[in-house]
Length: 234
Image (cartoon, rainbow, N blue to C red; front, side):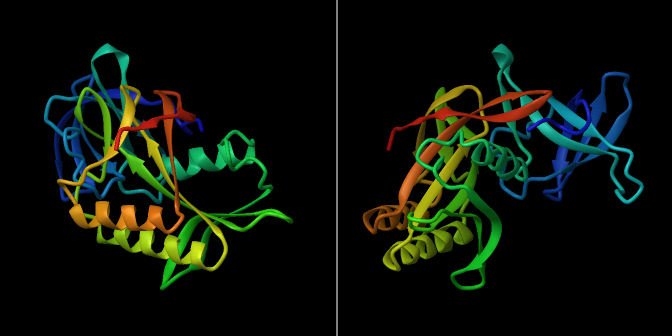
């Protein structure tokens, strides 16, 4: 998945009201960017961080910049736009690049299911059980090389795990897919100390037959691509 417009570097001044970020461009101008991330962004929104913005000239958009990446030491990146994982994953699914899901030819997004919920992707193929795929963007890292989810309490995420378990009980496949939007991590675990209820719900869902799939990403200022599986540390 390539960004529609070439990204430009900036320095973060502050993030506020969750969806706004004041930034300083290389030419010294200060601009306000849209932050497409409702989460806590723990460790990713410190003033002075080098970030990357996507400019736009859409007259319908009040803000002319969107915050897409955080740059770390060693040329590593974290993708902070929570809309990117589904776009990148859809491209990978359509190309048959996701191991274990490549046999499904029909891919539908945002399909209603459960109790007033929508599944990120419903995969279908004659002769195979329908496969419900819920996607979560992983951006938290509190230890070198270790990615964690969630970065804040997520009652919505806990609800989704229960609904995935119900799909398995009805005879379908269900996959909880964690897409690690960091290039500096090669392990993954649940942040049970941040949200014990979510961790317990995941254990119950896994015991009920919900599958876990953790995938890495390749990230640069040109785009985000789904990468190889990442080992689960716990």
